[in-house]
Length: 102
Image (tube, rainbow, N blue to C red; front, side, top):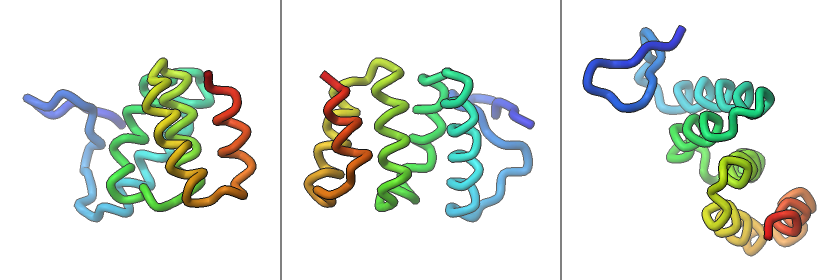
């Protein structure tokens, strides 16, 4: 159940848990669903909410970069992938996605 907090610009979860990892996991689930529904801007927004907690997770960074690319945030997606590939040059999924982004 989504609701908008009064005065807030982004959606919040009703009964939001203060635990950051749990909030990040919920945000990723919503982002994953948004990505599957081809709502790329919404997916990028939800991945952004989880980023402070999960930015070290390569799988997360890959999905976030793809959402940003498909949402039209090409330069941001490129930068994320370049950083990921620098850290993990054998990450084939990151290398392949980076090749697709022009």
